[in-house]
Image 1 (cartoon, rainbow, N blue to C red):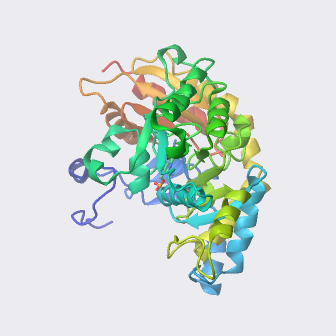
Image 2 (tube, rainbow, N blue to C red):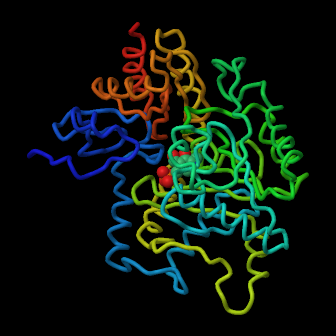
Image 3 (cartoon, helix red, strand yellow):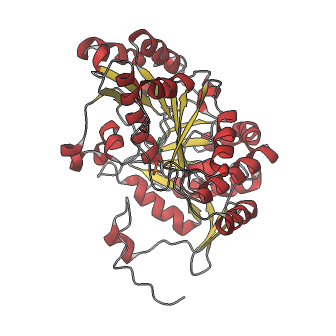
Length: 435
Ligand code: PLP
């Protein structure tokens, strides 16, 4: 491979100077493996970025995309549509909790979140409660990087430089407590942290609040699993005060917890669910917002005349090629029973993760389904350990996502026991070092 000019591409969420000095690139992928341009093989310990639940290089998706490109490469969905988008919406609705069955498409998780914010505002306005403009989110939350998602963000680096553009959001506390250290699955303590929502309703006036956003499992901060009873309590308080409850399932959607959505896994029905990533197995950018029937109906009923009911949408909403990729992905999940596989494999996965407990660099372990967080002992510069370790792991043959002082280890659902052992062997080697 010739010399690559790296001057022009500004990499997202990356230290570009460091990257140029020591690039870590992938040129090819298949199954749970990546290959660098030099031909070195790495295992994929984070399903790409939690997208590739069925592994890389799925021919079924490639074929569906190829066929769709030749049949109908593009249509707008403003006053037009393609049959394939209705087919996909039906398929997605079938996977969702009953009653959450109106699907709005975008291209990224960030777009899904910002679309959900606007749908909440439009819903309250349609019902004569346009004063409900405030949102509640949570410390350590990640809801993408568009302006609404940045406002909801609870991770300081994602907010600090952008404070001038954010909207009105109040934050609850995050749900991690010292007591929960090394809890496998849902921690037993911490449900009362949901009462922060009630306190906020009382302090700010519930009738000023449109909705509350939570990731059922907070993924990007390093996998924080909700305490038993916590989500239930949020649901009760949201109902009591007339707030919409939004589950951001961009990571947890499509089997990551062992059920189609975390909503079903934890037995809580929110009002809105956002999703992306594994919707197309990561192959083509696509996201969706799913809302309860009555939310869409209220917005439709309130619209006058022939105007669009919701003045919102993207050039690439329901892009036909993305729809084709998503349908092919959902076929794979169904035909290969991959959500069931995730559930069945989870105990083995979590046992392997919790086997890292006594390593020199590990200060906490968390996990549920096929997602886990490995908290690292911080260096003298807190927040940087994850990226240091991530670079070392790459050189040892394992790709993972890192954030702050944590690693998010979440392999594809097709990972074999042998591949999982190879991944944890690399983790053990690197995290066992004292320095
Ligand atoms: N919401 C959650 C919960 C996420 O984890 C992410 C991305 O990781 C997003 C939103 C943003 O998705 P995207 O990067 O596709 O915009």
